Image (cartoon, rainbow, N blue to C red):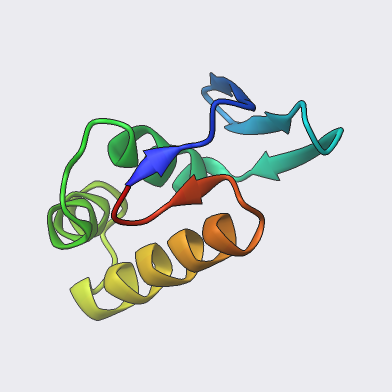
Length: 85
């Protein structure tokens, strides 16, 4: 996965913001979204991210997998990341 070079990120203890400077839009992230984003940028696999999210937030692994899958799909739809590049 590759993050678009047009994305700027601000993460804090409450969540985060992704700023797409090319499309002039801002996307707010909740705490789980910001954690997934941070883990995606460290090149962990989606399964590794789901396992860490499951443990960190005490949620079932299936829910964490679904959250990661949906989040990555949304990032792709918004051209914030590309898969396989």
